[in-house]
Every structure is written in structure tokens, then in C-alpha cells.
Image (cartoon, rainbow, N blue to C red; front, top):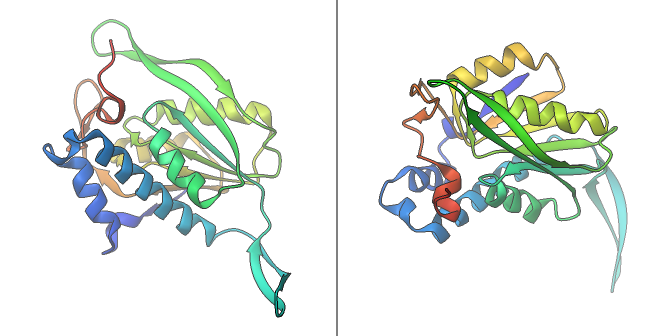
Length: 217
């Protein structure tokens, strides 16, 4: 698995990440969702550089132009619900992509232990396609691993891009051990060094789903 941290470069991406993290700015849900959408667009643009291209002819009112455009079939997937704004940003760029969705959540056992429940999954055939699986927070890596394997029941992607703007170093190490596949790239905007006893990222940004859509019972 390859890891690319776009936050290590000086770009406007870091401004959007700052606003996601800021305890005062993030109270504005519309702005929070919009920033996630912008970040999704940036990641999608970077991913577009990795696709396979060929030259096509396009007829204009005055002649013929040759344009290099991508040939890969893209499937944009996300983990509900926090990943939805990020997913929308990716779709703004890959507007003809097919879509997949996974509903996964933590179910706590005794103490701080938990396991991942999947209640719903919907996906097209993935054989030979480029899968972009997005989730805003990558804390332990367990949810993403389970969602990825669940989606692969619908076929084996030619390549998979995991888009996780706020990740923990623990999750990155976990995925390195559990996703033994050269055809995977993990894209991040920040890789944080700590987790709480409940496996929340520090400094992180809080609960992305609640910040985007309101608190849940």
C-alpha cells in the first residue's frame, strides 16, 4: 500500500483542513460540509493524474480537436454518514462515476472495546474498475478494512484509492499490515500521532458525522 499525504505540501488544502479542525469555525455545519466537499475535489483531481488516458477526437463548430481523456471506469464509494460531503466532492470531478455505499458503525462492548457492524452495502460490479473509497476520519483502520472487503464481494478492482483526510498513524500502520496489496493508495491531508482510549483521533477534529449533520442518539 502506498501512502500520499497531501498536507505535507503548501497548498490551499491546508486552509480547508484548518477550518475543519477549528473549534469555532466547525460549528457552521454548511461550511464544514463545504470544506469536506472542496477537499474531496482536490483529492479527486490528484487521483485523476494516476488514471489511464488515450487521445479522442472532438468536433467543434470550426474543426476537430484531439484531447487526452481518461479511459478507466471509476466507482466512487463512501462510508455513511460522515463520508457523504467528501463523496460529493469526488463526484463533482468524476461526475460519470458509478457509486457504492456502506453503512458501518462502531458497536461498543465492555469497556473501550468495540467491533464494527455493517448494516447496509450497495455496489456495482467492481471487476477491473478503479475504486475510490472515501471516509473523513481514519482512526483505527478497522471500519475501512471491513468496508473495503465487503465491497470486494462485488468484484476485484484494478486499483483502489482510499481517501481519508484526517488519519491516525496507528490506522496507517494497521492498513499496511492488513491490506497487503500493491494496487492500493491511501490519500491523506493530515496524519495525527495520537488516539484516545475510545479510539478518537487527537488532535483530530471531533465527530465528523455530528459536525456535518447534527448529533445522533
